[in-house]
Picture 1 (tube, rainbow, N blue to C red):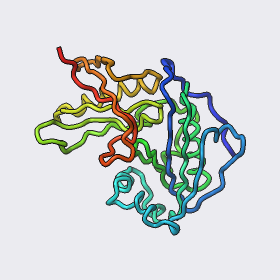
Picture 2: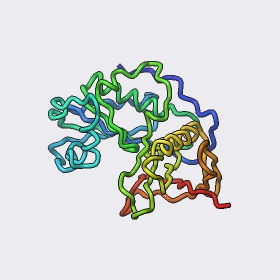
Picture 3: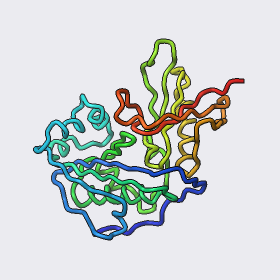
Picture 4: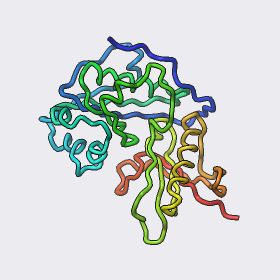
Length: 256
């Protein structure tokens, strides 16, 4: 049974600023047929199935502990390791929504993931944009009246290694492409300021999720930080040093 589409999460400060995109990968014992023509749950979405036997190296990239996604998967609390070894298929849910005035596309995506967990035995699902894994139990336990929290849909990363000796550490978000917004980054952060920097980025990410938009040259004044100037960089997807897989806004202290 296909669930009903809920009233969408609002974006009370919405500004038109381009399309949002989603990508979720689901690991299952076997692929299932979900496509429902003209059902609003699947509006703007595409669903593709891939089998482990058809491309073992691709599949290993998601589950191998030595890979970026696999190492995160293995550290996900509540993961059923036995069930994971029995997964022979993956289903990929993707979509792009032009200028989303609300966040209904995220709710609908998670209804599909929850459906796959409940009815198809999905073991884990990855939010590819934020590199966050959800277990079967976590998906099944999502309440019908699930309230929006930006932390469920984005991640703050504090890089443990300095990119240049003595330059301080980079702290940045992942996943804001789902809101049609650039990811955020601030450099030169000392380890003892990691938590404060992360909280600041999450607060700004909440504003973007609710519809605000930052552009190059804008000045933001987060509590506890000096005024920060926004410097916008293009989408780094496919570059030699991909960090975001998205556009980015770098927050630089405003001089004088």
